[in-house]
Length: 421
Picture 1 (cartoon, rainbow, N blue to C red):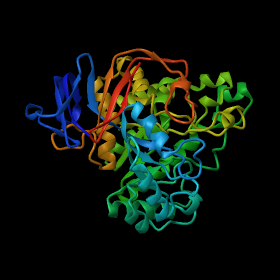
Picture 2 (picture 1 turned 45 degrees about the vertical axis):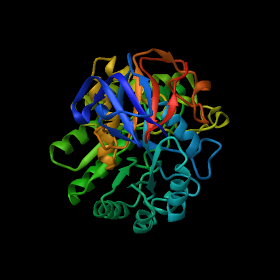
Picture 3 (picture 1 turned 90 degrees about the horizontal axis):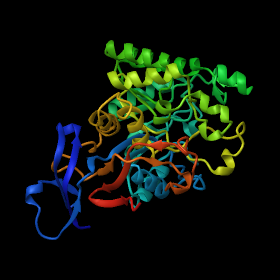
Picture 4 (picture 1 turned 30 degrees about the vertical axis):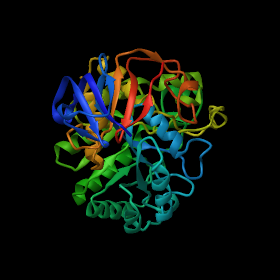
């Protein structure tokens, strides 16, 4: 691995309040003083490009072990690199679930050869059944960075409280899939579109009831919690008020909730089905405002690969869409081109803030930090599923023209992706 000098690039590094033309020097896998660059250095012409700290995706399903026909650690990280993602949080709903130290160690070992840094989430309950607690101390000893039953809520509230207490003690995060399972179970947002399609809907109340519970627990016990994939205006209002009241709460939403609404389901295409589902225009606008005012801290993908065969039938297909390769471009299109926020503010939501939530050495380009960054350009491109780098192609952005293109990704000082187009 040679040292790298990127010259005359527009550096956007919110963590260091940097926004202007300069040089970036990478030596021995970390950021170094550009003025000290000498010797055998690979020089990259950064003219016309922008550089930012590598993205940190707080919500990824890599499907490995056990579901590697959909994705695996290596292929998922190739997709990550193509989207500028250099660190990701891998959810535990694999087969077997990440409810034991051996599975944690398997993921960590395989990830050593991957093109992004993989941080492992341990499940709160065995088999993600919601009822029987895992040995969190053993999972932490094996190397988990967070706890979640994502994909399902933790049904037993006492187990959720115990996990939140233990996570706070260990200095790791609980990330909460907020859903009342007794209200959930539909295929699309409950309302006008579910009626028109004549399919069972998922009411916003299912998510809102789950969000309310986690806020109540965080408030009552003075414990932190991170709320996953926020999709409703009511959940936004509750999170906003909780933050004002001093509750230790952080939250994420996903690019598809910023770009699309439930109307996309009229095509009866399962690539627009996920959980939580696409909601109304009112919900979409509430999420954008929540990102703008800081109610929602981060943008994550909930990257959830499925095979074309699984997604072929609208009503029987599993929920979930892929997202890492399009995350920055889609969010840039919705928020920067949409006039909602600056590029620096977007990068803060997708890199700096997620790194802070997870408490990992990322989201910055200060001298001495791991050299994780991506180069991008204001360049329109049309999403072609067949040209994406992961195994599965179930993107909700297919055929859509996006306004920014990742041109190169560097992880740990190594070039892991280069756009040759």
